[in-house]
Image (cartoon, rainbow, N blue to C red):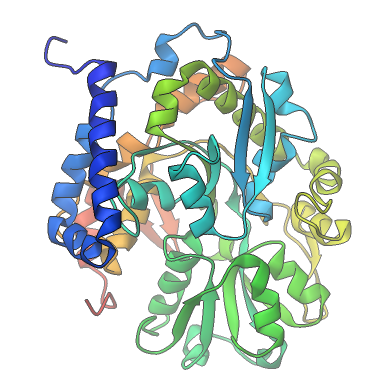
Length: 425
């Protein structure tokens, strides 16, 4: 323990990094070149330097310690992926765990990233690749994040314009214009994976642009895009407005894949360990509550109002219950179209990192396991679950099956090298 830096020394390192970050922001054009020059190996070393070793300070404190601050703000994007974070306000989960929390709606992912970094919010609804990317400095100044819990699993879809009802395979989509909500998103990585498996190069044979979720249906209706792999409610909303049809649920690509997540900065977790723990408990509790199909209609009504998702209840019910119109004249029943499971598997993080490497978002060598373990707090999430009486896990990594192919997290680099279609970079 004698060589392990103290909490104060870690805080000093964070301050030092903040100064470096300010300098980098002032030289924005050269910042990306600097980060690219570092390569993933150096960035992985940066992760190890700024994250505390061993047990989180939140777990060194009294499990029922009083929050250092009870008035907290949680940023969110108005999509069903963030259901536990959003519903925890109207359904009382934050209050149950001693917090006077309010949720604050952002227009897009870049905005919510900036809110988290500048401390405009205390915690955030992120896409599950975002804390990995931002910790490593991909797409932002390096800022260490913790991802304590996944919000939703499944819950996305490829939605196509109504004029494309004849499309059968990825090969039929050559020349299409797609949109996804963010570069560092499961939407982008799952769409790229699906297209590439069908022989379509996502950087050569189609266009993929970034569009905020709330603008996707309008772009589809206007003919600006042929389709998107996006979050709900905007797949079901396209059907509701007769603008598109649901071509494929994301669970058909990877069943039980992660999508959105609850995150905090490492600085917040260190400075307010009891508040962090209370937020974490509230989110895990709400996520398990949302996983029960018996609660889905109640939740749909709770998150439908204008200050949350601002959607017709019938649209949200179709998504959350899995009984829905597909836009092709069929009523489908897929109870796990969206589901909720807070456990942040390290193997999920490793797969995401392989796709970041595959598509040129990370350069150089990557210590996949080390980064996953520093950012995704799987073991500690299980401690929270156990305290609340929920099931726990025997391992933090597992194999995943994606489009019929098994991903082994212990063979990540070989997995990346095995793809025939990859980044042009």
